[in-house]
Image (cartoon, rainbow, N blue to C red; front, side):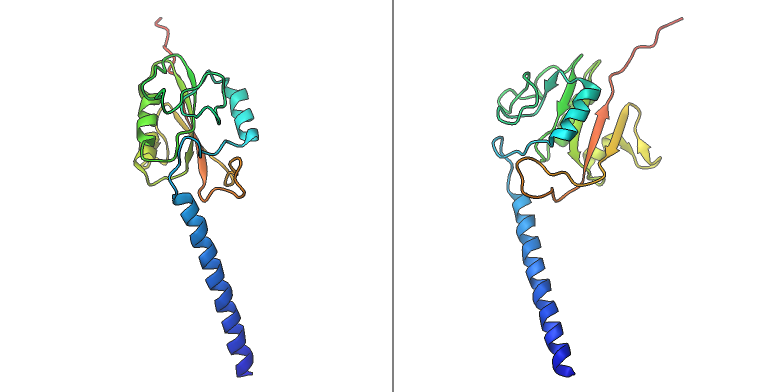
Length: 178
């Protein structure tokens, strides 16, 4: 009987080690720096639904190979330096520390609707700009839609290692004076 348990424990230990090694390998894949050419594309069904709802006028953060719209800004064009006033902006920034700058750009732009696809990282600085943690809801003028499952970016073999959300900054409408 002791032999059975020791072989069972050895087999379980072997499976756990193999699982841990595979998990570390997947984690390393997501630590590789994203470049303009390696940035993965947004799933078509998500893109089509959002574009039907917002009718985007510009893709603010893309490469020539993954642009979703004919009018788009690449890293060279620097979407942060462009005018977003009056635009309906699609923004899927490369997942780096510049997310705060992209969020601030949408917030400062006049008569602009900005829609972002971002990692659902509720403990980050950028998330605190759009979410009121004390009231457990988005700040005024912002909307956050948490996606129900992890996205499978194109042409990736597997789903992302993180959850995602859609963050929306609605264009401000002027109130008519009476």
